[in-house]
Image 1 (cartoon, rainbow, N blue to C red):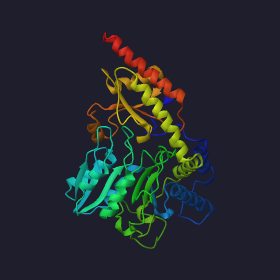
Image 2: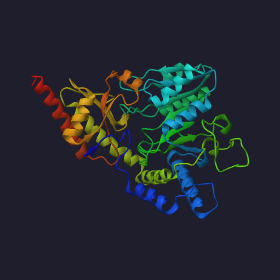
Image 3: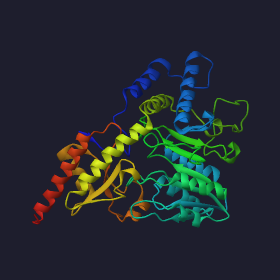
Image 4: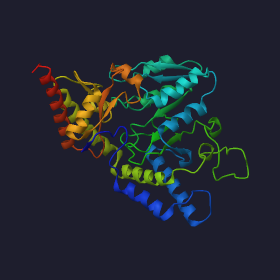
Amino acid sequence: MIYFDNAATSWPKPASVIDAMVHFMTEVGANPGRSAHRMSIEAGRIVYETREAVARLFNVADPLRIVFGLNATEALNLALRGILRPGDHVVTTSMEHNSVMRPLRALEEAGAIEISVVPCTTSGLLDPADVQSALRPETRMIVLNHASNVVGSVLPVAEVGEVARRHGALLLVDAAQTAGCYPLDMEAMSIDLLAFTGHKALLGPQGTGGLCIGERVEAEDIEPVKRGGTGSRSQREEQPTFLPDRCESGTPNTVGLAGLRAGVEFVLQEGVQAIRAHEVSLTRRLIAGLREIPGVTVYGSHDPELQTAAVSFNVKGLEPSEVGLMLDEGHGILSRVGLHCAPAAHRTIGTFPVGTVRFGLSCFSTAQEVDAAVRAVREIAVGRRTKSGRV
């Protein structure tokens, strides 16, 4: 089996991630921050050390400004619904995932905000000058993904960050596709809010992620999307006003965070630059191989330096779902097909409403797997032409 669905969830996980989760369940297991006994203290230490690891990875000065949640989707909702106010204007792009577009559209339909969607090229790339042109006096926030989950195109976050700073707007970055496999520095890239998920390139388990909150955002600026027990200020019935407690209510997924800590530490040890170089090499090999196959269309920039290791393609005469089934049942290759929860991106690249077949590589993928996948797609494409009598 060849697992090429890493843009959805990475697999396999490092052994250290599994070991950390088993250790928590067998040796710790208690509720962090709620009790004074040794197991609770150890659980709290694990959570805090996870914050520290994430802070090192993204260059966040204060680990307490990292709010944990279930995934990037929850983090994006916290940033959008928690910070935007009636009358605010938001600038976003035509390559966004529904985790951005659905909360934005809900706020727009409620009459709370106005949205401007800046078009990207058919390769999924963005010109920062177009973002600049879309700004208004009432623009409160710019929201963009760091890289597309459809074609992997990397957007110019640092340049847009400079635009946001000059205008006095906040920059919210959806880093679901890049956290762990592409260099990210909140300070250097002028990022105010960074949403990340643990189950992709951070190599942690599902049900982990969070929002990194920059110094330009005060705790009081964020309206919590949920309230409840935090283990702090328990004598009061009002939500705490300090981070991370203001935005973290209820017992956290501590076993998941133990795994996330191990995943982030694995990434830090391997080095993001080394992981990036490996994935660029494999992406170049994959794109070149697929583009040589007659009847196969590869989407995006075709430049591995301008994208992540997510590659979308279609085979002429076949639906993406048909290709995905053939890859799975005939070749043992697992991919992702369809619209990838990003209809705006597919409209931009011209594949709506059918979608594409997506291969998502990871730091554990190999050149041999890439070559096998290219051979499989070639067999499928040639078989289609043979049945159509066009060979």
